[in-house]
Image: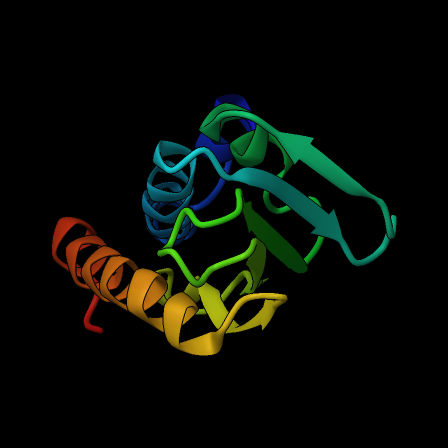
Length: 137
């Protein structure tokens, strides 16, 4: 979604979209800091798009109502026993904003490692987005 498209929306919708972007941005930044590969998968096009920065992800967000953000970590990034793998994060747009992450699952990565990395980032991003945009979470 471009800035021009965002500005054309109702103010309440702008706030929600900004909150959604905030939460996803925090997750993407944390993953990129660890050297992860990021892919955003549109359910309608069925083609994942690889991204190396937040701006590529942001430009593709909201192309459909639901998308999957896949984060693939280099081997051993999340600890000596982590042989690689990633987290698939299911994004659903149009709710309250901070609740943009509907669910997540792991691929080739122990769920304990994924939980230990993802849960604190996700929890903080939700709380911060709620405070920043005045949305009860």
